[in-house]
Image 1 (cartoon, rainbow, N blue to C red):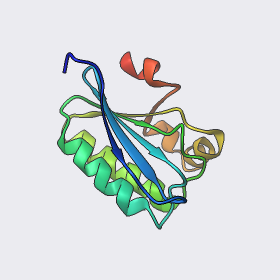
Image 2 (tube, rainbow, N blue to C red):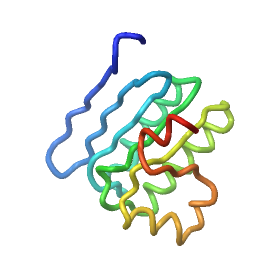
Image 3 (cartoon, rainbow, N blue to C red):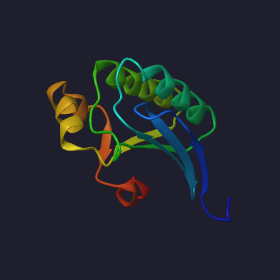
Amino acid sequence: MGFGPHIERHEMTPGELNITTETLDEMLIVRPTGEVDLGCATLLQENLATALAGTTNKLIIDLVGVPYMDSSGVATLVEAMQVARRNNINLLLCNMQDRVRSIFEIARLDTVFVIVDDIDAARGV
């Protein structure tokens, strides 16, 4: 992996969730872009399952491109966290927009997930 980042793109139709995956150093970064709701939570779930199967160290979910997430999206992230913990994979969330962060705070999930400001902060965790 010493030749720089590897990025996979999954093209979606407009209005749907777009997910990119990038390998950076020893970290796998998943970047969903769009609203995460019941209609696309399965797509996110599938991509996170693939990402978790493909890493043994650290998985970062970069939420910079997610302006809204409903309970199905939150449940998908909780499931991914549970799988990561069972497999001793460090799962972190970063770049949360205020609207999404407030959902995590209301549900007190900010005390369960490791949430950092950005990718640089995730490197040190």
